[in-house]
Image: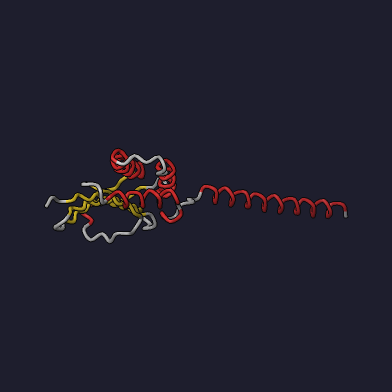
Length: 162
């Protein structure tokens, strides 16, 4: 009878240990998961995007940034890229605008952190596009991950002289 009691307790402790281990692994996995699933999840990215839109009308070369998906018609203009390249391009583009319109209230550092979380250090497809109208030339650099869940679009808009 004592052996059955000891075996029952061992089984109880083993099951408890397995349950706690599974719980801890699930907690660690969700802790490492991306918190930023789109620009809408980041106040800093929303504020920065709005700032770029607001000052864009006053610049000869303006910038528009979004996480909107682009339909790629010609994949010959695409290469493989690291998330770090997307972050660097984003940073350089925003810094050019901030040189003309310095604003300490723009949450640039937090936006960089959130964008890094959003891009999740994955390999990206990088595509380059151009669209010309009577008023402007829009050069687009577009990044997308293999799963189609991560999108970063950086439009550089060059106004034409009249």
